[in-house]
Figure 1 (cartoon, rainbow, N blue to C red):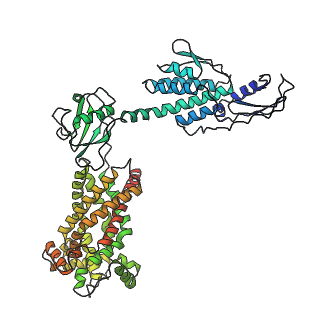
Figure 2 (cartoon, one colour):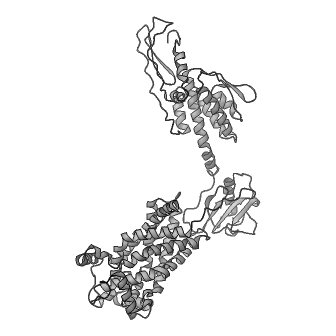
Figure 3 (tube, one colour):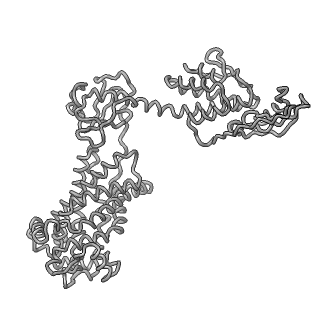
Length: 584
């Protein structure tokens, strides 16, 4: 009662509520405990309404002068299942009118400079939770709390010190205080969860910035034991790298002679005045302090069989989408042969598509697709497995990505791509307007292969091997170095969309670069390959007949197809690999 300050039967009512131990803390925090209207037994002439108990008692009174009751503050709720940040919990703590809030914030801030903050916070939270969950209302007032920051923190929440890190609660014993203590416990929980990340970030906050991505002459150092990768200029002195080494090892007194080179091995002593390149730390190296824990073991290597299966599945799925563009591209590349008969698709890609659909229907765009569907899986499997095997022990740098891509592309071209494209191009050439008498295109796939072998010999399946190997090595080197370079700049593994865009950009660049080689290869694999003495002679004949730009015939549809092809391959490969790892 506001008039006589009596609590009447409210204390007994609140104590009964506290016996429900499973929900009492949520009730105090969320203000879900309620009371109905009662009459003051100590002051019969003054009617009161105990409207609600929101962790504190809001008493609405009708005084003798009939003044209106005070308005109740809006209820603040806390989702007990969703962790809140330290600052969010402090904001809720302000809503209950905590006068000691500034003292509490200063006490918590003092823990940020102490190494024993975790044990102090744990002990303080245990003491607060014991009070909040006490069914006998503040009967368990004594608790222990260790650490140098404990006296200030415990005083901020209402405890006085005794002896030997023991404390006794001497604050208010009201529902308001209970809610304040519960919120203080939640704030300490949030602080303990956020503090390790803040400390880790603070070690690197005042250190010099990295050179921009792609800057010439930069080197990447892996700083152990935190495994932080850091870019430096190759001509930076080692003194510039030392602050990062100290921060990574959390050892402010580390000296250059304490640094150990894990890779590459260097017998030259570390000298702060020498550049990273002179110390053998270029293009990459791993640094750690002597006596620290050894570097973590490398991630387990994937089985080559799993990689081959994942690549094969991804390649088979991709070719079903992109083959019509390959069909258009090949027909346009054969324009040099078609020009000798006065026929061909002089209107470009659109005319080729219209003519094919008009004469053979939509499925005509899949003419000659047999070898592509037959070889798509093996091609992709060989490419990804070969790159993985070649790059397994190589440094993760653009140069080695380019080199391993060359080897993977050459393997793919020699084992799968040359017979695949040789058969497909012969079938498309036979079906094109450049050939009046059709020999193979009307036959089923395997019968057409047998007829080609009888007419031109089995070795004709390897016509154009040299330009195919050159083109395959060149395109795959550009694709892998582009894809790996883009995805390494991302935070964490790439998403499917990121994989597709990174692979598509790398593929489009490789298509533009290798288009002249691809045009020569297509003509060397055609039915008129015997007209040319060599790949160089074929290139000269094309340029002599139609000009230099003829080497880029079919470049438009090829760039679009390769963008989709490589983007889909890398995106599907990443996703299929995860599925295969789960199944296998």
